[in-house]
Length: 294
Image (spheres, rainbow, N blue to C red):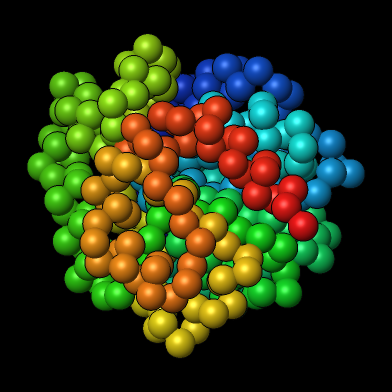
């Protein structure tokens, strides 16, 4: 099986930094391991289990600890939050042989919901996590009350996905020095880059991920291209929050697709791709307000 980390020392540094980020959450977080078809899925839970459930998904090269450091405390006041480390990703989930043979995203999320005995839930994700949120809603509309897609769009082709990723992450991601990590974050962020710069542990963790995580381990997480004819289900259930400066989701073709299909979206001023870090208070409120609507 493929190694998720380039060195054992790198894995150790990532895990130690992961735990330090959890200590900065400002709210009690429990770590759980769930047996799924594709291996052990590690999740973070916070909030009262009697509250409505909210499942959170991070982006491609991230994990739950770094993604929700500025959101978990506020969201857990209203929801029972389940923040997932993607199987095969840079968190603490451990994929098995089945993951590398035939990974099915919908079946995997089914397993997570079943483990918590959830008939339905709210769902939210950032970037690739936004894709998981709308795609699962399309495939299991009876299990999702509403979906919030942060820094997301609905691509029309695989070329669109790859070309935008290449433009955003190259060449800095190929040479993961501390200098290039900062340069990449500045490129991905809007003017509120300081939310990263002032958080030494978050910056350190980001550097460790770029340096030591083997991104090929996430390649089983395919983005399925969805035809316009399938998107009507999302009109009443889904909202997209997109950063003004987000080169990965705020571009004419992506915005036109949302408009053409009558999908609900909002451009968040002074935010880039890391929208929930850069504008945490705004995003937290919009998530809670959206799911408070009748």
